[in-house]
Length: 188
Image 1 (tube, rainbow, N blue to C red):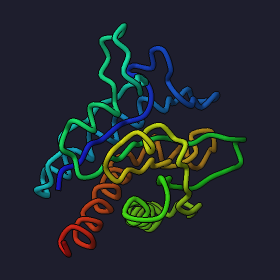
Image 2 (image 1 turned 45 degrees about the vertical axis):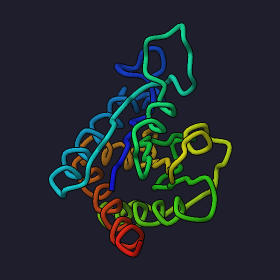
Image 3 (image 1 turned 180 degrees about the horizontal axis):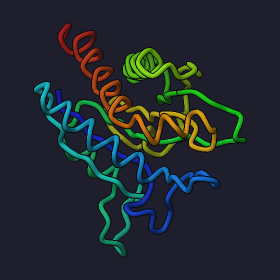
């Protein structure tokens, strides 16, 4: 199985760091990239080919920029699945993990596997798998795709997990991907 990873938001936070904890200044772009790099390492060790690990806010083809277009890069990579990694934010009270897929089907199965591993491994609240067919990275990719909202960066307890347990998030995401591979790809 070939995997394309997309840590959310712009490299180095320019121009968009994503969500930022207003007290600790922990930035989504930094957490997502750190987790994605670790996921890549664990998947590679497990014998899963990672064909892309691109952090970019450039989601569409734009000839005026030299940043890679994430959806085009994924679609041209021969990837079997696409995993976008993010941190959530809302009102400092919301907490937990949720995973988005385009809709029912293979992407939903991938989302279920990743969500189960994160919530069991880190003890985050299970906010469920949700359908978001309008999300660009879910709609414009040609393979099963998910967007993982690891935890809420603006919640005190979740922020501590995102700051101190990035390796655990990465291991859980990688295990979710390999669980999915065993459930879906090994049966094909």
